[in-house]
Image (cartoon, rainbow, N blue to C red; front, side):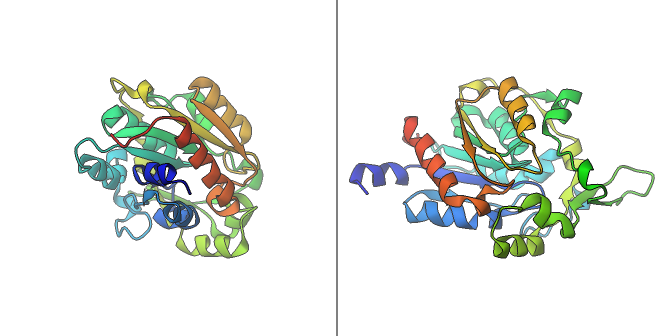
Length: 268
């Protein structure tokens, strides 16, 4: 690797944001590739995810759920910026951070098979474009009603017997097996409270979208609809299920290297 390329990679700090029910663990293949190339990578757990001990049924706001990332960004050294990479429902977290912190903390946002909604109260069209439609598989979601059977669910999770078929249909069997042991319920109440307040310079942050062409969670037509409604700087297509960090990590890594090399970034 050329000296200038190595120097540039060391100036870049990627923060990988998992989707609902997953954790920082899901990025292990991509993180290994990136760190071996000299990039700085953080893959944290949001509240109740991964090794975070919080109970998903006790999280009632999106701020509660996102607190580990909010704290991380608040405590970044002065003048340091990061590149946020979000998967699936992690895209909602990315958009929240874009509006919350703007270009002062965030250099770029990369959405991978992710919910990319701009701002405001979630509309019926947002739901149509971004909420997974698993109706063809019938009863696949487990709900917990922590506030009582007459109240909305406090957590939800795709039933484990459907993980391979829906989430990881193109992924190596060892990865889908590991994931099924590690996936946890996601905080339904927190996601229900999502609302974005428009930041002053949110549109100054370059956004990139990575489409997953064999996705059984977020259909390609849904991804296309979100791209049309809030056009990103670049769009990449990957032959993948909903989890390209398992099913096609080398191609995904190549996209990340390509996009960051196309936009000047000095970490300042």
